[in-house]
Length: 482
Ligand code: ZN
Image 1 (cartoon, protein in one colour):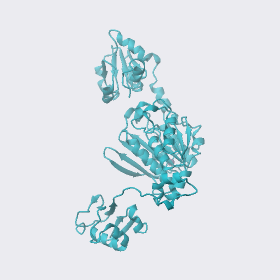
Image 2 (image 1 turned 135 degrees about the vertical axis):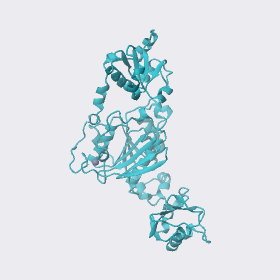
Image 3 (image 1 turned 60 degrees about the vertical axis):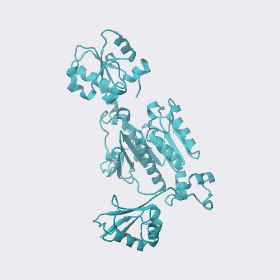
Image 4 (image 1 turned 45 degrees about the horizontal axis):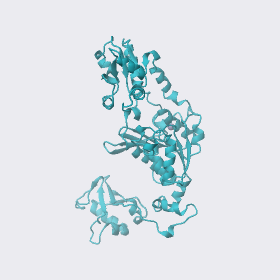
C-alpha cells in the first residue's frame, strides 16, 4: 500500500506543485529513494551527493523524527504519513526588476514585498487585500491584534466598531491601546495605532453599540465581518446579520486558557446558530471580566481569525468553514471538530423562522436576568453609607461572596469570605440576628446572595451597591481595582 508523503511549500516547485505524493514502499528509506527518483530536482535538494540527507531537512513519520534512525529499519504501517520538514528562514528580498506597478506605489511594493514573493499571494493577492473591506466588531482582546495585523498586511479598508473607553484592566492583552490611552475612546487609540502601522489603510469608525437597528446598514458596507465581541447578544446579532446579508463571519472566543475559532459562512457551511441555536442562561458562562483570561490568548486566537480573513480575501488555502478549532494553551494543543449545517437552523436552515433581526438582549435573557437580581433600593446601601455604618459600634458583619483568589487581591477590613457557590452549605456560619452587608466585585453576585439569604430568613442583610469597585471609587482610592 502507498504511503503519503507531505511536501513542504518550499520544495513544491520540484514536485510540480504537489503538496502530497503517494509512494509505494516498505520502509522510509525505500520510499524516499523512489521519491527522489520520481522528482530528481527534489532529490538533489534534500540529499547530498553521497546520499546523506542534507542538514537543513528533517524527515518525520507521523509525529516522530526519524532522521537519525536507520531509514531501512523504519518499517511503515498503514496510514503512516511521512513529512519532509526543511528549515524556514523568511523571505528573500524582491529583485529590483520585479518592481513598479500601476496598482501600488513603490513604497507599497516594498512594504508588501514578503507577500509579493509568495506565489499563493503575489501581486494578485495583494491587490485583493487592498480592495478588501473588513469590519471589526469590538476592539478588545481579539480586535487589537487583528486590527494591527490586517492593517500591516495591507487590507485596504477597515471598519472599526466600539463604544468603550480604554481601561487599565484592558492593557494586559489589548495591545492596540497604550498606557497613555487609558480613559480615551478605544476607537481613537486604535485608529491612531493603525495609521502608524500603515498609512495606506482607509479607516471607518463607528462609536456605537451594534444593534438590530444599525447592524444591517453597517455590515452591508463590508466583505467580511470579524466577531471580536465578548457577549452573547452581540454574537447572535453579528451572526444573524451576516446570514441575512450573505457575508462570512470570522469567529473567535476566549476564556481563561482556552480559545475557539471558526468561519461561519451560511452560503458554504454552518452558521453560529447551527452550532448553538440558543445561548446559555445568563450567568452560567462567566465573561472574561468575571472569569479572567490569559493575556496572550486573544493574541493567538485573534491572529487565527486574521489568518482566516487573509485566506478568504486571497482565496488561498482551506478556510475554517465547517470546522471549529479549539485551542488549549495549558496543554498547548489544537483540536478540530467538524461542524455541520443544521437543516433546522432557525436562520440558515431549510425553513428559517427568523427573517429579520430580533431583540437580542431579550433572546439572551439579559433583561429578565437583571429583573431577577434587581433588589429593592431599601435592601442596598452605597459605599459611603457603608463607610459610616462601619464606624458605628457594633458595625455590620461584612460578608464577601467572591472567590478566594479575588479576596487575595483586595478585601474590606474585618470581612469574612464565603463564596456565593458555597453559601447554601455554609449558611450555618451566619446568624439571623446579625446586621449583615454582603459585597462582591461589582454588586451583582452579592445581590444574589442577599436574595438567597432573605429567602432563608435573614431579615437584616443588605447589599453593597456597586461592590468593592464602588468602595474604591467613593471611599478608599488605595483599594486595588481589578
Ligand atoms: Zn445556521
